[in-house]
Image (cartoon, rainbow, N blue to C red):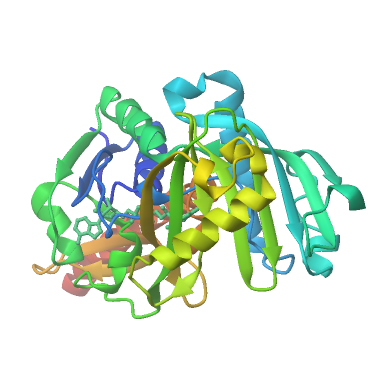
Length: 360
Ligand SMILES: Cc1cc2nc3c(=O)[nH]c(=O)nc-3n(C[C@H](O)[C@H](O)[C@H](O)COP(=O)(O)OP(=O)(O)OC[C@H]3O[C@@H](n4cnc5c(N)ncnc54)[C@H](O)[C@@H]3O)c2cc1C
């Protein structure tokens, strides 16, 4: 019988990790308070843009690998399956910066993406000095996550809706699980047995408009301000954005600023009629699960209440890059789980051998 594992969380990180575990032959159960189809401020993934635009600087090699793996997987999905099935679209990207530095002048990822080139001066957005054009992917996260759930359940995975107060409560929903994977995003700050105070929310406010004629993504980074335009596979376009640490509120003044800036970047969004020409669907605020020191992807070897060794693998804290790093992060988590389960078996064998030895 295959080894059973319980994953807490049905965001983009939990679902991707669960799918990869399943592909390796594990029997997987997901337990989550919110699942695809739900919208709640405690559930970040449905609010995500989401395009692949790496934020990882040149000096962070380990995180670069996660984004590079994910770019390749998303590109393959976008190339081989229709976007109305997966929610993944391959589109052109244009990003411009007001600052020329090593990260913008010599980006580590220029050979990872397709069709990379530095743009000519005439293509730059106002107040910017350097820009990149490349082929990227846009992921309509609510649609994409429904697709992941379908793949998971059709292959025999179980998805249970439940709220846990302690990380080990996952075992009540899957008593035969050999290990727990913690993919609780921002809620890792509050979950008993984890309570990671390094995790904090970074607010992202966006305006969702209907503009099915927009099939490219643009980002302008001027000083600390970022404006972005990300189309989704259903004809909606996400206009952003804000990055405010430790903030939970919705604010209409911010929405007006976002609309003005993005219509200036791409007047065709509103058919050249200015902000009043936008077909607004709704205003959204999501909370990115940020973490001091970056995401936590690591094993914790602990014991259950009745003293049995227990492996918990943590995979949370992906801030504003959880989608674009999802496949790479999940791959790392799965490698850790394989290793952790092997070590756990050895601990059990060592203790049996130790017991026998002491009785000789
Ligand atoms: C406006 C905005 C734009 C963004 N744009 C991008 C982008 O362009 N590219 C990109 O890569 N990323 C982007 N992000 C970031 C991305 O959305 C996040 O990094 C990602 O969604 C985090 O996913 P997650 O699975 O870790 O967390 P979540 O989606 O929050 O999922 C957490 C899961 O854990 C469950 N859970 C938590 N606690 C408990 C508990 N106690 N009991 C049971 N279940 C529990 C939840 O119910 C949920 O199912 C953006 C975010 C925002 C807000």
